[in-house]
Image 1 (spheres, rainbow, N blue to C red):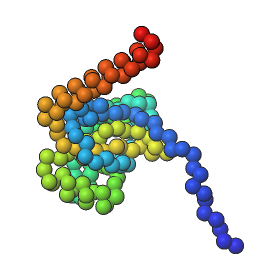
Image 2: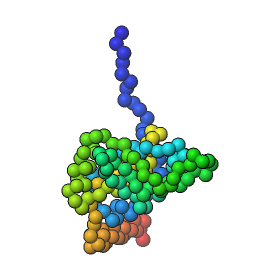
Image 3: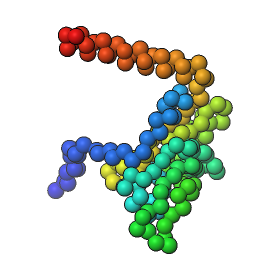
Image 4: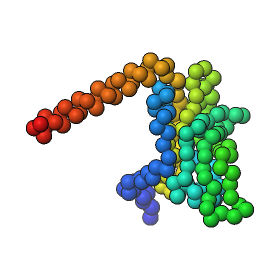
Amino acid sequence: MASKKASSNRPEERRKVVATNRKARYDYTIIDVYEAGIALQGTEVKSLRAGRASLADAFASVNDGEVFLRGLHIQEYDYGSWTNHEPRRVRKLLLHRAEIERLIGKTREGGMTLVPLSLYFSSGKAKVELALVKGKASHDKRQAMAERDAKREAERIVGRRIKGW
């Protein structure tokens, strides 16, 4: 008897976002986005599930063919003992070899860096949304703010017209 493969009717993947880096989208132009796993210790996972993480100063670097996340702050677990983790330790990111080779090539081009956009749980595993970015000049930031303000104002006017004000 031939065995059947499991059908791909999986329930929708749930994404529980733990932390986001809102400033990264303002300061940088996003070129490419990757999803990477993180090598964590047990108390780090428990602290992440409690939502205690900050991506404010985090960035990624490529060393010896491996990608590491630096500057990520995961608060110590409240109920941990001597096994607690160090809050700002360097954490290894888990990517496919082809993705790492592509990142090495693009970061060596110059002017590009790796910045985490968000930290979340997907199917029970901790993941990082990692972006290859290029820095924005200050006039680009002002232009982006002006466009955002204009869009908000247009939405307000449309909302008022719909309500009949």
